[in-house]
Length: 275
Image 1 (cartoon, rainbow, N blue to C red):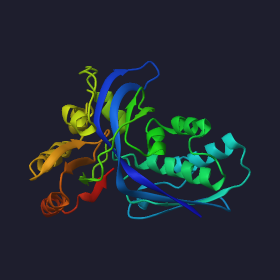
Image 2 (image 1 turned 90 degrees about the vertical axis):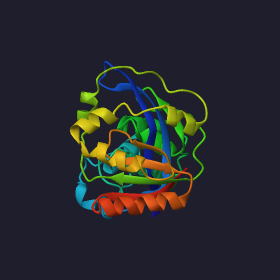
Image 3 (image 1 turned 30 degrees about the horizontal axis):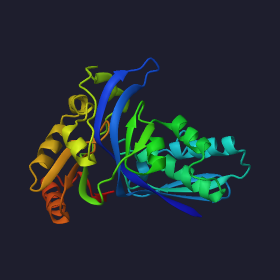
Image 4 (image 1 turned 120 degrees about the vertical axis):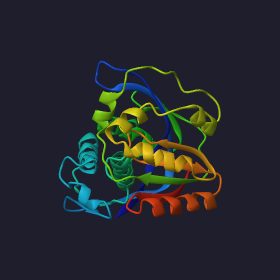
């Protein structure tokens, strides 16, 4: 079995510029990836998708699952007759703004490519990823990148070099479509240039205000993260509801995790580093 990691994706900043005629939005974002996340295993065998892990119950293992769609698209594009046995070990919250489904689909594509001898930079693989979702190409790349267009036009940037980070989800779901529908359509300007963290600090997440309208607890979570000692940046990722805080030192991150756990023991937390 080929095993691939599907790390959590963060949007350090996300500027929405305009709504396009095709229903997507032109945006600018800074993609980075955590050390931790889900895991996907793929082997040739009787076709199946088995989902394990703490968030398995939130997913359907049917043909509409992004992992299953990625496998079907790969076989169709590369004329692969073999079928596959897939295991998804789900540790990231579902539909939470950190690319869980997109990361899982991308990991599936990487595993299938390794299994069948396909180069990871094959243009057909990237095309499959783009057809599956706007975040899947970034997750397929799996490296810090500036994304524009729908978010699938990517330029490599410097990462954060294993910067300590705390990810927190307050246990509420927010619909990506509903968040975008509430965006006020005001273009507040482009992402600046320069070093990655500086660009993030000067940036914003234009989806944060509409997400807070749908789930006010996001504002409470961000206020709690912002008051933690040693925090460099706290922000919502993607369309929410997961938020993150970046720290210079692991000790400050760990102290913040304890504070969040004491205040809200039911909230999901991940102490990790950002590459």
